[in-house]
Image (cartoon, rainbow, N blue to C red):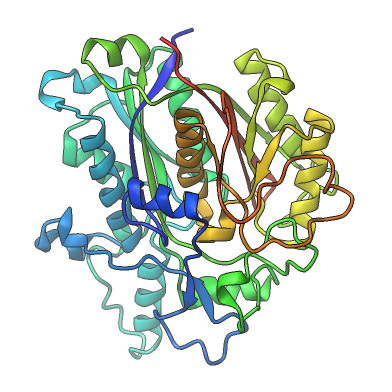
Length: 414
């Protein structure tokens, strides 16, 4: 099978609008939680989220095109622009029939859908819908817009597996290149779901933290006092490329992707399997594809949403797959920038890629008292990142419906 490498990264997050700022904030352990500014939260149980700050869509999008794109597509274009520049790609010199886009979003244009239906409901039933309503809303439009912008005619589709979405995108991209279906793929995901319907819906499902008196400390994975996740938004873009293709054009190779595991809990609509059955299978599949033993993995970026049941089930799965290992670093980066839903896997894959390329292990912030039954089983760095040798980093993502996606990155060796 062909080897697949990472040659470009792009990010737009609540703690940094580019990869450098984002990564520096991760290393410093910054929180992006703020009181929600998008709508009046007076009647909502949760009044805070991790919002993207200072985003200017005109940096990457023509003014006349803004009305055509929902915020989630705008976020995607911003992150992809950075990734393409970072990868130093000159598409004019490459075979664009062999370059594709696989992009994901869990909610797509949920803001557009909400606005249009609200206008219809309050407009005496007169159907005055925006002509761009459907293309702004649908989940595959970001993937399509990216391909149109760069003239890429290779494989092109969108993935959706709830909060495992963009990790699924990355694994699909990895597979297509490995199978010789493409030479390069722009992959990742974006989400812009800090809306009344989304926050209200997750509140109704009792999934969100209601620690309104301490927003910055609300996301606390593995902590005995955790009470739910903190909503986030943004985008992560990754350029995956076949190794020889990357070498031929003189690309800077950042890391290698060596495994992807997908599975299902097959258990509950919204809850994780209590023993982490799907998570275990996903991690096992990634290890098997990479042909490595569990003791070779140095760092796991856990899904770790800070929910009472979810965090424990994941730790059970990690213990089953890796045993008790005090040398295995496990952290929950959502403590800093919240849960980006469908974009979480892409942003957290960037963390894994930076971890193996720079030998840095990010910490979990806010957490003070780790679940007693696991505190001595793994190494949980808290507060700020630490220097450590990282040859392999694993990224876990799980979604409503029991969807599981685990990606595995390796330090690049020529």
